[in-house]
Image (cartoon, rainbow, N blue to C red; front, side, top):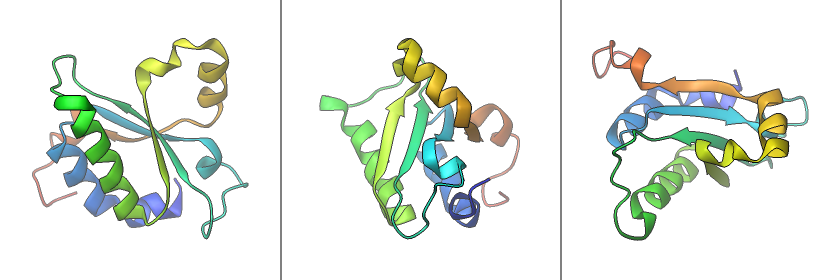
Amino acid sequence: MNRLIESNRNALIPLCRRFGIKRLELFGSANTPDFNPDRSDLDFLVEFPADYDFGPWLSRFMEFEENLRKLFGRPVHLVMASALKNPWFRQEARKTREPIYDASEVSKIPAGHS
């Protein structure tokens, strides 16, 4: 796992819970030797529950993305998992995808014990 993600895991789990995230995956250069800890951005695939309330103008989506930027101190690209309909994008993302949060697994751990 990317060291930047791992070092912020204790803050990331409660953030995902607060926003009701179903699943979050890291992909792209952050999972390759090309990642530069001083300059590279972070690319995330996010999955929300089917009945998720995004708020007006996707405000909760954008707020979650901004919180990730603040947490990691760098640019973040947040992509909905539904964007994987594009075959080329799906193939490229598949090469580097790594799950970093899954509500079905984390929900078994009491808050504050992550």
